[in-house]
Image (cartoon, rainbow, N blue to C red; front, side, top):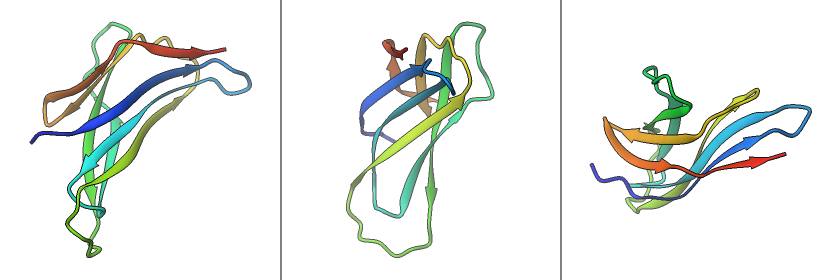
Length: 104
């Protein structure tokens, strides 16, 4: 399946009182009844790169069959040293983020 996505950002927020890390972007889904979800992959390597899995949750709501752009976000509380993020869907790389934004 070909996944269309855009505007991916990875950000480490070191501002007190609650540091965090988040990755977010926009994913095009086949219809508004589908919600994209980002989750941490159980398989991580020993580097500071983060591997995330993109999946879709479907509702039973009747919707128009029109492609829709939806915001998706992954967030972890606490200090982070992530240097890059790889996002996978069904085992295939969708996007890789090399530049992690750091806010102090």
